[in-house]
Image: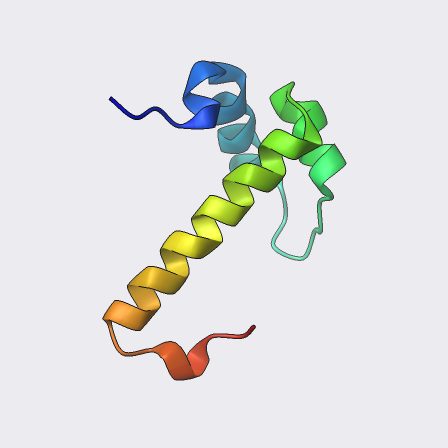
Length: 71
């Protein structure tokens, strides 16, 4: 069974939920800010972001929206 890197650390899920609920739309958070709240490393946040962007790109291509993707 494949596990997500952040599934081993529930603080990441809780931290991301808190950030989603409390951050304003115009607020920009650094990976360090996010990692501090989630009690994990910046590298863990980078891996999650990379995986999410890859999934979003795959979905966009499957739906024929590749013209809207940026490199």
